[in-house]
Amino acid sequence: MSSKKRKAPDELDEYGCVSQACSASQPSTKAVEVAIPSGDQLQGVAASDAHFRYLYDEELDFKKLAEKDVDFAAVLQEHGQLDFTDPKAVMQLTKTLLSLDFNLKLELPDDRLCPPVPNRHNYIRWLKELMDTSSYEPPGRPICGLDIGTGASCIYPLLGTTQRPSWSFVATDIDKKSLQYARKNVVMNDLEDRILLLERQPEDPLIPLRDRDSKKVTRIDFTMMNPPFYESKDEMLYSAQSKARPPHSACTGAPVEMVCDGGEVAHVSRMLKESLVLKEEVQWYTSMLGKATSVETLVGKLKANGIDNYAITEFIQGNKTRRWALGWSFEALRPAEHVARLKTSSWKKVSPPVLMIEVLNMPSGKALESIIARIEEVMGSLELMSWSWDAKGTRGTGRTRENVWSRVWRRKKMREQATGSFVPTSTPSNECRLGFDVVVERGISTTTVVVNWREGHDAVMFESFAGFLQGKMKDLG
Ligand SMILES: C[S@@+](CC[C@H](N)C(=O)[O-])C[C@H]1O[C@@H](n2cnc3c(N)ncnc32)[C@H](O)[C@@H]1O
Image (cartoon, rainbow, N blue to C red; front, side, top):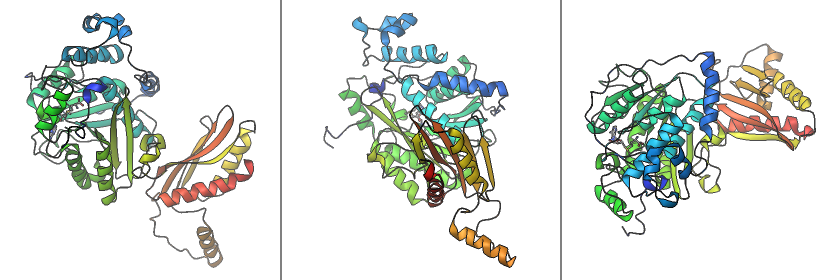
């Protein structure tokens, strides 16, 4: 491979990584209790999400960080520069951000990966939206995540439990030293009741639901993983050299963390294979990816296995560092458009089907009441399984087992009424084939009505419904 082509994912650019080893107490074997959130906690979800939503959208201001943290000031160079090739400086940045933004403490060895906080936060932020939008329940439902390969920092469970009071985690690793530090970090932050650490063997299944650990792990709602992305030790060392980083340090990570046969595609393919057996036992299977080509390859594998409900996102940190995340589900509940699909046209081919369709766009001057009255009238005329309107949120949710707006359905209905006979359809009577939201959004200059696809596997049925509603609203525009 030529040196030019050898572009490896660059942890340091986004801003660095550290690792270490440890030998603390044994990983806990206590089962994680999932807490039921109270009303106050649900309100807390909204408040804490608002605090975390825009963190790190702006570039980090090192001078400001130094004003707030003397330990960070001590590693900052003249003119407010940070030396990203210095593992100590990179490690301190991670500690400082975790402390200032999340009130978390962290201890890491020098020879294990040091996680860049903004990138890791991006993944948690996306997961929150993925889980929230692919559910009819309000945000804050009890959720247990599985972090496969949690590393010495145990960063994802620390960030996830801090932001969501009703989340708990099972965190696995095959590296004893990483697990020892992970344990320390869980204890230091008083999170033993919400994070269960499990030591696994390299040949064990990645998801511990059907093996010796299945008694301790009774439920997993999502999996997450930042897989080792190098295919060989040589590739990893070459990458470290080209970035003037010390090999096997906090900035490069140890080979056990960074290298696996076949790289990230092989690791995620392992998870896919397990998911094809576990199916709906887990709502979302997800992984972070360091290479855009891996996303394409893996989406191809999802499609080849008939998986139509999946989500892709991109994490951009700093000027040039990009990461991606891919998730898939066997359930019918679908995430929001902005969570599952990338906007840029180059991603069109690999993106999942459209999840949101605009059915009306008109100047804001016109009365909102007439739009809402029309929606209510149209929905009331359909034989849906359910329809409910939230006046405050100006949105309604409907579910249907059949294409009840179509001519074919209406003719069938008329025949039934005329003959008094019932013609059964192929859909079992209690099965929802399409769930949708109709949302009225009033902007400063325009008011729009959009339909979101919430449930089902039939993209044609969703598009047909949106087309029907568009026709019914046409004269308002
Ligand atoms: C790139 S590191 C990610 C560490 C941490 N999650 C982060 O994002 O900073 C990959 C981790 O996966 C672990 N790992 C590798 N193979 C594994 C397996 N089969 N099961 C569980 N963990 C594994 C490694 O030991 C390492 O800690």
